Amino acid sequence: MSKVLLLVLLMLYFGALMVVSYFTGRKANNQTFFSANKSAPWYLVAFGMIGTSLSGVTFISVPGTVGGSGFAYFQVAIGYFLGYFVVAFVLLPLYYRLNLTSIYNYLEQRFGIASYKTGAVFFIISRTMGATLRLYLVINVLQIFIIDQLLENMNIPFWLTATLILTMILLYTFKGGVKTIVWTDTLQTFFMLLALVVCVYYIMTDLGLGFSGTMKAAGEEGYSSIFFMEPLEKKFFLKQIIGGAFITIAMTGLDQEMMQKNISVKSLHDAKKNMVSYSAVMVVVNFLFLLLGALLFLYAGKHGLTAKGDDLFPTIALQHLPGWVSIIFIIGLISALFPSADGAITALTASFCIDILGIQKDKLTSEAIQLKRRKRVHLAFAGIFLMCVLFFKWLNDKSIIDILLELANYTYGPLLGLFAFGILTKRKVFDHLTPLICIVAPVLSYLLNTFSVSWMGGYKFGFELLIVNGALTFLGLWASSFFQKKYRAEEQSIIEV
Image 1 (cartoon, rainbow, N blue to C red):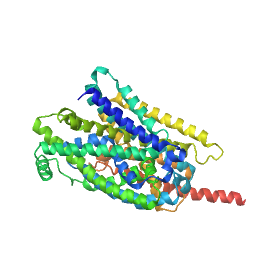
Image 2: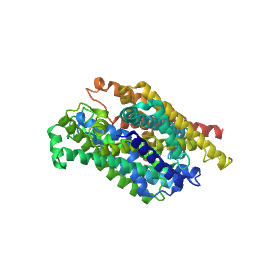
Image 3: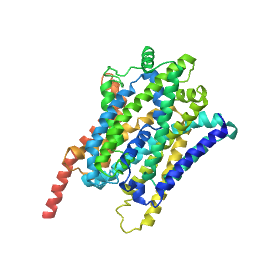
Image 4: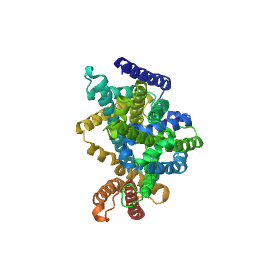
């Protein structure tokens, strides 16, 4: 592929994002940045959220899992589908009724300031680690397969690639925030799905197969198994489906990045339409990625290729397919890269400004000063993202990355427990104990996960560890409610004396 053509494509792509940013960022204020002034079209939000949910990890990694796990991931996708309905018909009505900009304001109204801050901090940690990890994985693929191979004479180091990409993200999100991201994510999702469909169609055609032929060939090679029936294993279908549902509830419904796009829609009715339509499309898209994985392994087998895992898709797309398909793949890869970070930086900025700095409650500070504070926070998070990406590159250890990918089980569990206790009960909690409870629950979950094989007769936790973590948080809050009652009674007796 021509180096000049690659650079032109990159400049045109970024130029398109900047044009969108210009039109969406005009006359933008903090409310535009945080919630798009609650005027975002629901269908654009639904379509753009596909790209945010998939990210580069799905684009690169999910097809690579088919060789070892077949279509097991589809069990999780079924769970996702069920979880989206809980988000649509339980959580979204709550957020709209309270007119929230940050969803963690609910915790303050329900429990108190300590619970509110705890929820916000757990989100900031979760999203920072998750988003920077996904960003690192895609930048690393971009560096190894494109920058180092196609632009080898330029000797562009990884740190410079990461800095340039984060600078570009910062530039187009700096003014418009959520309003800009709703439109840029729509553009990026389109190119990501275009790359997926084109690669599926071309490889299927090259192998001389149709859909039924692909599924038959994949079945013969052991690639198409969906449901796994061994209860003690991580891939047991009930564990995967239930775990997938709770992952959606926690990582979509209780995540400020995902929900700030939903609550940017004008009405609850439209937000529900957004979530339901999005859930249906996600099932189809996840199946297509698994189908692509089967095709990639069949193609690799036919041509004697040895690449596996995360290297399989880029190796075939860039080294064995026609140039025009490679170009579409590169555009799709870049499109998978940006949603890994742009929405996360914006959501983290919003959460820190609203939940930690209390920017919306500060009625004495002028809009101009608050705008400057928000921009400084935005810059700070871009810097944090860069440091995390460089740290992951320094580690360069896939076993460490696997551990970090499991972090969501520990960091989203307390959020699940907090919101579940608030919604399912009417009890008050001893607010000052909430931070301690939300630290103890993940620690106990980690110990349980570590020793489950010896303690529980060979049982291995999968995604259901998130549920366990949430349940431990729930029990801790329930116990603290008794302390709260006792504390209130003692306080009342002192007042009466």
